[in-house]
Length: 264
Image 1 (cartoon, one colour):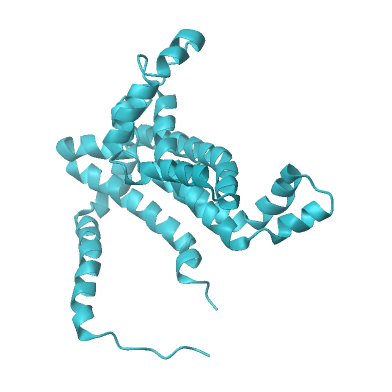
Image 2 (cartoon, rainbow, N blue to C red):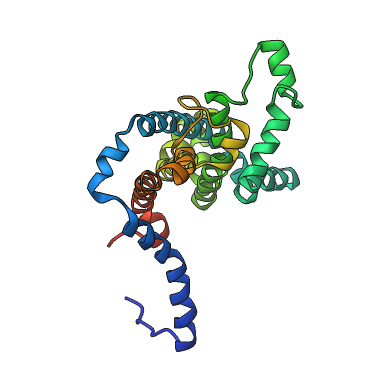
């Protein structure tokens, strides 16, 4: 039986309307300023296409890293709730609330050529991450990983352990149960986590410019291209922004069932 529709109290309508306006008005302003007549020409500019290529590579690899590393971590956090697990969960969530520039600075002092661990990477393996495409991937992975882990962990907690227990009764090892039962049963949550991680990696700016720099063809992603274009060619900046807005909306539409319930 469908619940009756309730009219919201008048005292709540005003603040709610202002909240909607706070989000919607900037989007309308962006769309209103978009150079629709020259949009295609601006988006096919060599610099934009180069930044697009870097963005695709960085975001896809970062989402892959977040999935490969985050899926085991999400399972462990969902199945264990001790003090250590809570500390690890808190640490994983830090990039979600950390100012991106601070994250980039932390990466620089940890993985830079003179950083805590970066000096050994350089000396032992000849690996230098700052101001490289690999460094941009690391920065994007740093900010994207929490989105994947929190999404998948929540789904695994909600699903419970019944299927895994049944697999264990039938003789499956924990790893076999994870690969053949847990992963297939969680494919929707995993897909949502991948989409959120990819979208976050695609939009990353602060950690990237701080740790990886803004090198054309190597670390200059679309958000960094927008930053440069705002002074030299504002209409191109708006055009790229509209594309990223469209990508963000597409991700939200794809995942709408996870927040609003599936259509009946």
